Length: 164
Image (cartoon, rainbow, N blue to C red; front, side, top):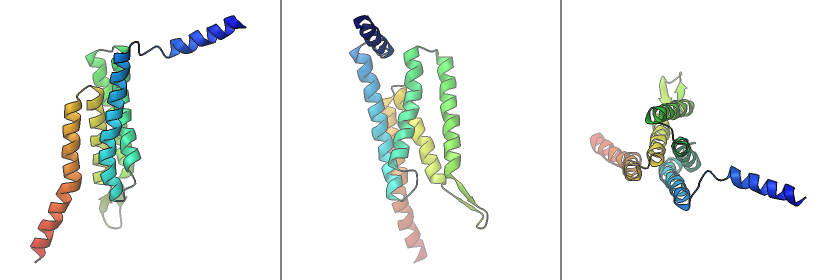
């Protein structure tokens, strides 16, 4: 019985031994937490506007994109293979974004384009975080927040002045 418990214990330990040192584990944790935070910032703006893709969606998209980058990095894949991973993430996110766009044939208009673009951009931020480009990811999040939150205020202000 003791041999079986030791075997089970060793098996569990070996399955979770991918992160061999504390430094590597800390990098993964920090990158995933940053992805959640940055995705949440963009998702919060969308949720405040009553859009279906809000905080949780953006957090998951950003963290998922970062994870899709972190796993191959840990496996030690080449730059060429990493390029393929990034292409796959972008393609997959494209399908998710397409689902947020609603074509209204009766009005000959589409809605959900900004939300789709935001999800797409959130995935790009997640990729940047996964690649260890945290400064770029933070800067892009700030710029995206300005586009989503500040620009509409100026647009309304300019629009109201033109109507007078």
